[in-house]
Image 1 (cartoon, rainbow, N blue to C red):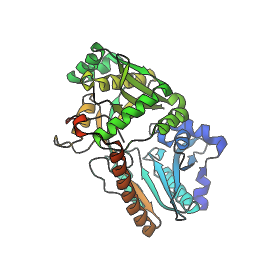
Image 2 (cartoon, rainbow, N blue to C red):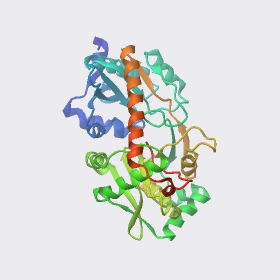
Image 3 (cartoon, helix red, strand yellow):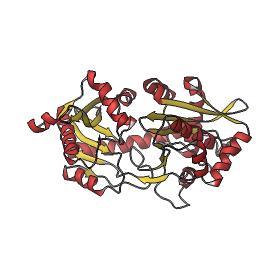
Image 4 (tube, rainbow, N blue to C red):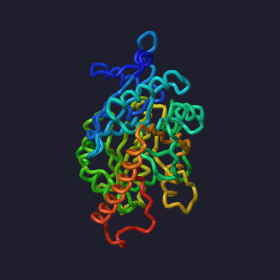
Amino acid sequence: MSENTQNRVEIISEDKIPELDQFIASHPRGHFMQTSMWGKQKSEWSWVAIAKRDDYGKIIGSLSLLIRKIPVLPYTLMYGCRGPVCDPADTQTVCDLLEGAKFLARRFRSYSIKLDPDELCTNAAFSSLLESRGFKHLEGGKNFEGIQPRFVFRLNVDGKTEDELMSFFSSKTRYNIRLAARKGVEVKITGKDGLDAFSSLMIETGVRDNFVTRPRSYFERLLTNLGEHARLYMAFHNGVPIAGTLAIWYGDKVWYLYGASSNQHRNLMPNYALQWEMIKWAIEKGCRIYDFRGVSGDLSEDNPLYGLYRFKRGFNGDFCEFIGEFDYISSPLIYKGVDYGRKLMNYRMKKQYMKKNAKPSSEIPESSTGVADN
């Protein structure tokens, strides 16, 4: 870190972490994946954060980074998920944080720094700024090619009542929320007691919709590490769990993080009831945004992921596209080699997972559009 940058940016020490997390919670660009709690959740990574202060000693910008050792090789990958957290128009602060990240990359022998900022694609100036500092804008597809979803739905809940939001939803969505209640679907916040059922439903959803799911232990750690900021909701019918969701609250936002549902009882519309309960949590916490998270950016009706888009669209949130992923590459040869190895490993893992959890096709409905996000 140059002397000028070093004077403006500090590496957050253990005793300053509460101050950092409070800044992230209070900032409109704040994201739970930039907090120390998320660093604890990603136990296979190391976590470090940098911050910039104003002349009065108040934090005005931060960037938390996850660092992972590459097997065999003496290099690491550095990932600033949904960072930095600052005013995107404050060019000096953004540049100082980026230079601070490069300093850490040299210290930790990182072959690449990956960022996917919480910034919409309409902010071309921010993309240009990142590119001017040596970050390469990765070409993304329309589906879920990135680490974090590039396309999401976000619902403005700021100052709104339950009745106001319900009237804002499409008529079909309102009908399905009420149908679930009439059919006896009951939604409960279960905590860790519901993890066995949730994990089982998640595997069922993964097989149905062809994606690899996380193990039960990951969800248990998430509820532990995020504490009051995480909730597991389960939908029951006649006492039987038929669907579930995991939601995160931090600062002025609630995010729908994971969802799973049974192949049976989908006509009872439990997923609509679950979304409504999570939206009500956002209202309860006085949030500004409820984030439905990922959907496909390919809006053609023949896209297999179109059903997920249609489901979330019914709540009449804003369809948002982020600027996507940016990589600062300090070692191009290692970058290419690791990228190839990662794609090969992901392919093999998915193939093994689907083989292990495969069910006869007769048990899987032909029209299966789940609500599970990556």
